[in-house]
Length: 391
Ligand SMILES: Nc1nc2c(ncn2[C@@H]2O[C@H](COP(=O)(O)OP(=O)(O)OP(=O)(O)O)[C@@H](O)[C@H]2O)c(=O)[nH]1
Image 1: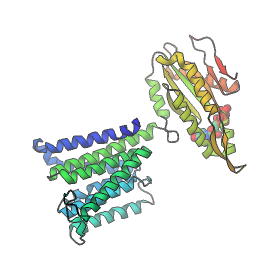
Image 2 (image 1 turned 135 degrees about the vertical axis):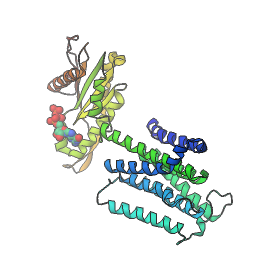
Image 3 (image 1 turned 90 degrees about the vertical axis):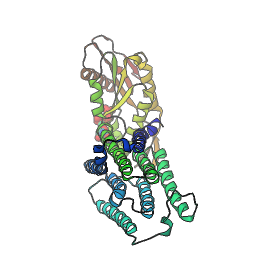
Image 4 (image 1 turned 45 degrees about the vertical axis):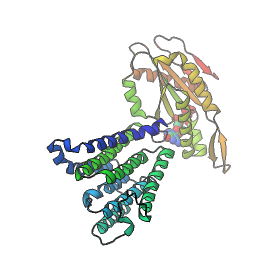
């Protein structure tokens, strides 16, 4: 839940700051005001280049949707309403479309869609097509079928995007929701082109921030388990000092599991084990080391409790049934897996890499002692080897 609200925090902040700024736009220095018309264009170009670099085709479409008022201006009530209804609805639709990358065979659909959108706005603006229901400003206190229809489109867009953000916790949906609200506020309250430019720039900034967060996620989070990955672990190791413990966790007989049930079922088990380790090793911080191995870092405060915590994690992994498809029996069965643990407590002056090597050696011992057990490594200070579990 906290993660969900966190995904809205920065977009919300950018949006509110832009609304506040647009109220005081007349106080801006003349140079800034002169730059304002260019700002949405510059930010859009940067966002599109980043979207291309990070292979995010949906962001390209959103940026094009946002730029329509920049291309056609706010020439008439009809074009504003037409633009708003189409943009909000399309952004809402994008929340349900799977990301399919930037330049691939789907690029044709994407460009067809954008061309259709531009043609539609141009046609409405040039009065080639005219829809009576669009002729009223949509914030009209006279309730007519046209205002009702427009409000329905906007309400549906907000509701479906909001629901998909809430249910899936998807960061794209959080940004899409902010864009829809931003477009509505822009169309309703902005009176000058400078205000439109400022609010549009903020929308582009929201998507730029989304792309940066995505690049961070791709670099630091493991795709399968969503745990922080090896790069994040290496950076955390650099910052470790004083007393701490490193734990290596490895799923037992995982190759045999993969061979019996298939790689996709192996993936399912890895996700399951990752969830158990993350849930029960709190306040330890869990990383996917690679393959079927995980690393947990425990800071000084909890070192006395480390043994019961790891016992709990081990028991939870062992007790939790996992549903897998058995290709031999041709049906879904319940199975269980176990994991082995190697633990190393830091010694004064010892580098984190060396502690990690000791934890890995302890894990190797746990495997040799029959697996499904926890082995504490010897350190310069700790001369005893402590073993528990079934050894
Ligand atoms: N499904 C799946 N398998 C993976 C992944 N990463 C590594 N593996 C498999 O994990 C297996 C690791 O096998 P081993 O290192 O031999 O270890 P093990 O079979 O678990 O045996 P012990 O560790 O000695 O108990 C290999 O078969 C890899 O292909 C992954 O992301 N998904």
